[in-house]
Length: 493
Image (cartoon, rainbow, N blue to C red):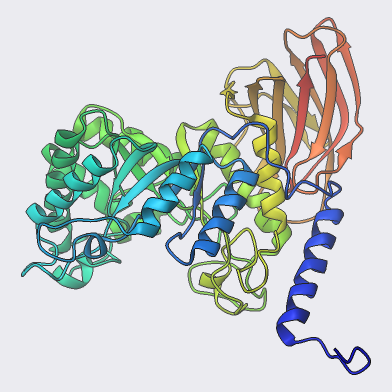
């Protein structure tokens, strides 16, 4: 080789630059090995949308990243209906799907299986009986695999049903797609339960169409255990959703959130209140997509705000903490990796790492969620009534769950963990870098030798607020709170 005249290839340059960026990103977090050190335990309920099904190298990398993160559930469609039934009544999983299931099993990651898309083998590509037969087959084929739930369809007004049958996306007025979908849902759910009575069956029918279906066809929900929800904040901060308020009520005819557009009310309305009213029971809450695009801040998409990588990290942490605090069985992040490199397109930039082309460089959200996994672990318990309060210079004493609003001002949520207690504190609302000192007081059964550790969840920076442990009454002073959650860990020695 002529070393004197040697010039690196463009692909080699991209590889070296990606490696340098990765090293810088990890070092700047304050924890140089965080991105590659697998957590000792997974985070119970930590779901991830990972679009497996590409090359083995791509799939292997995604599974490796999920293992590093502490993901416990992957939200995945192991081939669409038409891919798994190419000849009528003859079914087979693709070899790469079987390979990925084995790798996920080895990584101790459970699978929520998506059952999805039309099949043009049939005169009616959305034939209820044909789809139910397919569902029964795949449940039988996967009965001995680590399947945590089966989800019937994904956004039916956007995918297949709306285009085939017509009608408004929200089901208002004459919307033929909605009763047709509900029929398919009922057939599929019955077939799944017949194939495996222990299976958990979810449906991704949310918003006004869910309410209309519950009201008109409650019998079709007999075998539905839970509702799969995509509570994207859109142009709001993570404590809010683009539902609620008089304008949405007038448009949709039903309320999907309170007047504050709060996330917690949106989850409660869809999984608790309306099912209780029309079914006489609640449905499990599964969040199967939730994310924020790190696109160009100068771009103003119609449905989403582009956010900075730091804001994406803080927003993901705040959304997950609120979700776990309000009954979500799984909180699913959309998505693991960027789908492209066009910064003007939000759809390409929802990942918590860069794209495969850009070397999977972790964004701050990757490290933030990894930290949450290590803090909460597999055995966390939400503590809604822990005797704790906090105050800031501009806020009176607030006890969480009683007087604290859910969409503005300081927020605090506490969990019991295998190591002690963990309390997350932040200020709701748009992202900024402003912090305010806070004083926290709580009473817990911990020895005087217990350690108090405070950390910025997004940066990983260790904070050093003053604290006193007076016979189980712990007072923490001058803890800076802001848009990025802080966590206070009370650790047994």
